[in-house]
Image: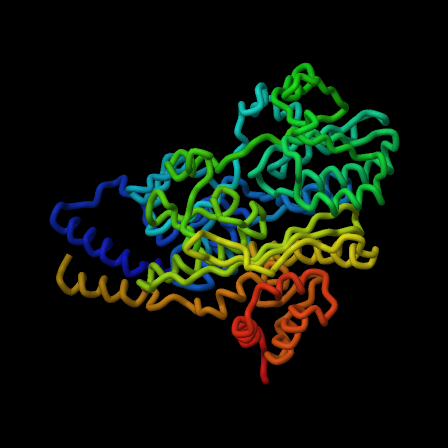
Length: 427
Length: 99
């Protein structure tokens, strides 16, 4: 394939030609240069890479993703509930390279040099870029909970990045005895997938009800209120009476320390809990590569322009998805997908010397409380001078007190959404 | 590099460079959000209805009815409420086929 060079690249290429003519051969370690480097092949990055090529097929787009198989966090709770196998939520980037013409590099991106516009890979090689898209997702904020680090997560899993952690938590559930308790400990806001811990509690309860009928789920929460709370509570009362107990922060639900080797956790007021299975969902921040490149604020998240997603810290690097501060949009796969397309459109426009367009976004987060019981929260968003804001009068929650037909419809649409969005990401 | 080679290189570059961004019109930007549920270009691979075979007038009427609450919905009433008449027309034109 012929490499494409943008207009801005043309000036640079011309200068390089002139320099090499005057000074002899170009330095051997000069970075290979492409139009756009996308770091991270998940909901934000895969979408951005695919739409960059859709908007401008001649652009050279390299997607850097360390994993050859990507497991989606959406629907990973179904794996925990025994309703899907891990392989059902596994995806590859093959069609992105084959059909969409994105070059996939399966390596870890080690460091981003925003000033010199290069990214360094694990093998030491470098790729130069005109524009970079960072979609690194979240990292766990190890140590925020005393005693909870990467090693502890191999004993008491977070399962908040899908894949081996999901498999580990599922194995622990299968190994537990009837009558033992499953603890889920969600963090304070903001974190990836706000309704996720409560969907997880629901689908684990669904599995317990049939397989460990004397067991129950205890949610020790660092918050007092949670996403879709009234809908979840109504569903739990109907489907899982007495099976799910939620302890809010104000009732000493917030855990502050973890002892993985002895298998207990401790709350802010010193209450110690042990359980058959303990799932810690720790505090989070933007993926390391974004923080290390100086793109994060004091809270560990990356502030961006609400239309282009250009970092407020440096031009030519765009941050999308969970790592970004995207105004009122929640940290969800749908949000990342929506942001990836608008960022792609504006990057293509910038490379063509055109002004950015204002963004329009949507988000619908489905949660399955049971295989035939779905609930959702939705909203339409726009770029404004005050950041990304929800459109007044749009969105909202599924209705309370709806009949089983409505819940079944939403459950079916949750599966339809999964089929569509993964097609939109990976082709 | 000779002047001729240089000129040839520049010509090659000029041909390869994207002349303009592809379609990033307002209608396209609005329509980007729809694909996450209705599939790329409105072609759904799953249980959510495709929207690629409808007439513009059908799309416009459906979105307005969703917005008014006169068409049964689970989530489209909440989504359609985020769009003005003019934006609905742009979406209808973007996805609609024929007249």
